[in-house]
Length: 501
Image 1 (cartoon, helix red, strand yellow):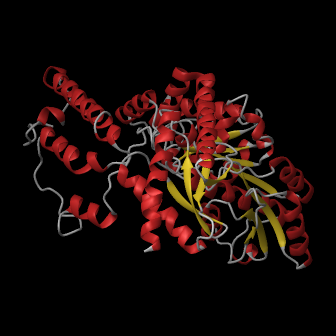
Image 2: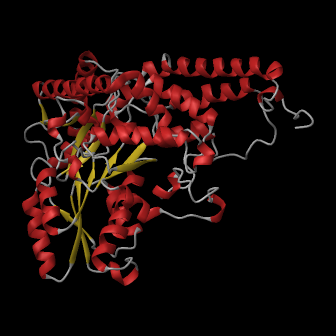
Image 3: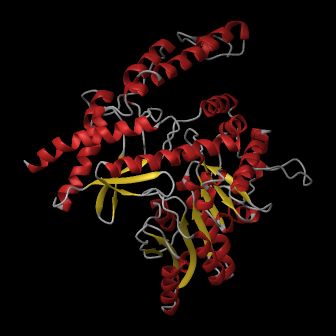
């Protein structure tokens, strides 16, 4: 910049001169941190969610027009911008840090992970290409190795960080198609070669598996959904029967998609038996452990997740139970070359200086090209907390989930006992019509939301509505959980009167 930019704070744009800009940048950092802490100890401490319904919040945010306005033509001071943040956004942000928050799978992020996210944005490393990231790609390599070790994967294993479980599941099934199916067919499968293929998953499988099958060009009906057992788990015998039926019909089984910690209930499929079956039938085994994999860090809880190391591909999501801010997912594979065979390309503008150099280019292992420096926040968090620290937080969540289940049952709720730390509960007074009982759960959820005491979601299990608590809040205690149950119980009398009227 030859001339200063016409702006209220040019020192926050052209930052080359430390004499002019360093103090201003430090004030900007202090103000940013202050706004964050004012939110943390203000709105976030008051309630997990605003009570507004969606149409009300749209009007509050956008105004009576109810839609975005034009982009600002002139710049504003940082004070003005922060005022907008404080007035328009902060009071209406979801607060995972609130002790009554039991969200889908949104944890309160560790402070060290927030520091890592901040540093990563300043460094702005391009992790797709070694020359654009330098040491940054090595941080991802190290974090991926730690994840592989936690899940029992061997020295030949590899992985890549992703935006989340949806991307990881899509990439995993891409590898299954372009490595495993290609080997069996003797060609890269496209078009008509994808007809007559079968993949197997339970009714508790994440929606992204079906989405991936469609995006990868497989025809309708490729994914065969198999009913889970009464505990919402997939067992090998039901898959054996489906495979035999499909082979008899001339179809080609390709893969089993198992779950280790389902979104609905936290259920864990019979991974060892499904791994045996996959080996016998020459099928690819993908395990979606986006939620559950972190429990392998706990010596106490890891026994619930045997056999993860036998998966050909495995989805993990550190932004769930490793308490990281969005976004941070990951895909692990048993064999490094599987990712290279699927995603490796080498355009001329990424050429290395000499054939003797073999730098780590992450774009060769991922569907994504440009990727942020996702690994730094987890790298710093892991060094700060250690595996033992993560294990303690995870075990506290599991203990708290069991406490929630006990308290809910004591006051008359039906409860699905948590396998990990997801609790599904349902107030079902005797003789109440099932459809009315479903409406009761929805209104109880809304009453809790309005109260500001806590937050639960709802889900549908076997056609019926349940309240659902994803207990991955390390800031929550038994007293906080008791207040949530007390609020639901107190609200139930009035809600039942409304429904009776």
